[in-house]
Image (cartoon, rainbow, N blue to C red; front, side, top):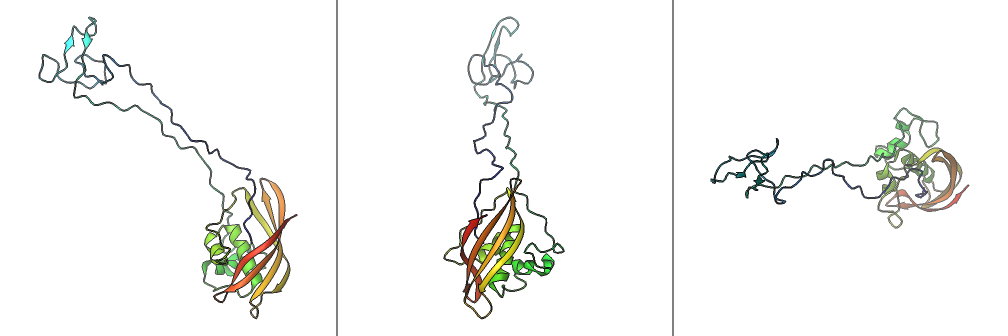
Length: 226
């Protein structure tokens, strides 16, 4: 089954998020250096007032119109900023349990059907058609590891790009050629139905399979949208 790229109904903004300043910076007196005053407003760092010995000197006091002097060893106070991360919903993975009907369409539970190939407990698919079904189920449950493992090395992508706006709803196998335990190659023609952005659709593909190190792998396919 090939990767299908479609415009997503949900496309979060990629614009960079800029934090805003929650509180405006306090007014600066005398200089941009933070100050320590003997009679400064509440919340201002203080040192002992007086004449010398490291204390800040208040000339006349604020009420008398005097001038406050900055303390040389005062360190800048950081402004309060808001670092909010925009909410971006992740893709919703369909809920498929071992007891659920297998998404591939066979009359069996997922736990004893395609799940055994996904987990590796059942070995590898013995036919090209069963591999095709297991790969379709892997798209449904978004099992990237199984898809990459059963992809021919010469056509395998670096990763599988699952469309968060697409939900697979059914598989129909239309025809097969060769692809049995006695063959080296085979094809599977199928129709996979889906819902994308609330609208139903179907994808028809003739997939090609071959053997790699004895196991069936997917090579590529001819896709035609219905």
